[in-house]
Image (cartoon, rainbow, N blue to C red; front, top):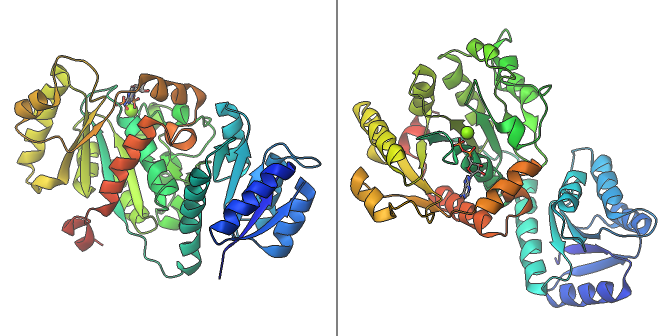
Length: 387
Ligand SMILES: Nc1ncnc2c1ncn2[C@@H]1O[C@H](COP(=O)(O)OP(=O)(O)O)[C@@H](O)[C@H]1O
Ligand SMILES: [Mg+2]
């Protein structure tokens, strides 16, 4: 049976064009010319996907999306693509906050629209038969060989890519307990619950953790770091592996962002990990740190492929190229992520990661390539045995 798509757009030309294009691709199309009519058709016809213009008479696109999500009440989820004439990031963020899953800027190429529709239908369709689906339970750690190399950037955007592009259920843990940045990077206040709420409870189990995780607009769940450095002390060496094990039982991917300290807490996290991604840049002090870390991890007797190297800002000019770095480390760099200062910084300042609002830009594509490889790789045997 052809999937039914609801088009809500007041411009008769756009409506006609969309109807034609979609029907050519074999979809059933129903159309509404204003927000109120759109809502009515959505309720009556239960389409598989909604294409929603932002500027609409009566109710605008944001209001329609918000109302649909309210009425669904978390029970169901129709994928919504927002069609917007504006280029501003704020507009996109507003659309996504209102409950849209994707957006396209007019004018767009029909092939682009089809690709987005197919990806969203694929992302949401399997969930109907996901009853009994076992969470994959993969635990990935992002370890910064030095502060400022982009560890948090990789962890946050990698998490969002795994969820939004590959449809995985993802929890991101801020393991930088004293000075975690996730609240700042994701524009979340100090009032949001954190890992402290987990470790101060009488018993730690997944039901409790589920009440503490914060739902981000991108669709990933977050276990935040304590709101202040003092409270970080409440989290002990025993807590982390326990919490991570609980999380693995409920998510496809658990990603942990940790800093360079090789203290007992971080070593516990590394021990529990299926793969440790060491994030580095091509400079001397970073290379020195990476060598020390590889040595230390080597002493601990882990399988060689437990550690993978990510060279961030790989094409930035530092005088050290990839070959030099590989030579100095006596091993290959597994992943490279391009240097794109503008893309990285603007998303930082707006509190919305580039993978969320600019997934189609070069940096977003680099992260997507990375998670695709990770997702295709076989989970390490140890991670399977530990379950
Ligand atoms: N690929 C990249 N290209 C350009 N700038 C980047 C890139 N990755 C990260 N950055 C920038 O580097 C800075 C440090 O990033 P962050 O993720 O906080 O590092 P860490 O967690 O290792 O301290 C941020 O300003 C970020 O925007
Ligand atoms: Mg960081």
